[in-house]
Image 1 (tube, rainbow, N blue to C red):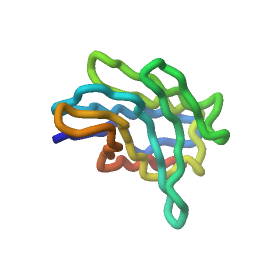
Image 2: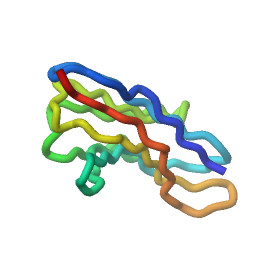
Image 3: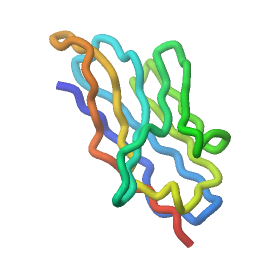
Length: 120
């Protein structure tokens, strides 16, 4: 089985920073991509940022220049550094990993979600 464990969410004032982490564990054979989605109340889940195994990245326009995604392949961990946070960044952030295991072909796995609240 694969588990994705997220950490780093919380309450921050506008203009502040947070760093999210997501560690994948289990019988992992290869990780092709990792990233973060978010879902605000009453809104659809949207892709925030993603990074491939070759470190190619993409971001939703609303976070470009403020958020940075990175990964540590040795630790099967992805990070999201969020700077200059705005109230509209408030959402539950979900980590995902596109990976294969020793017994399962390429599949998407999801974390449990971590709340990010930007408010004064």
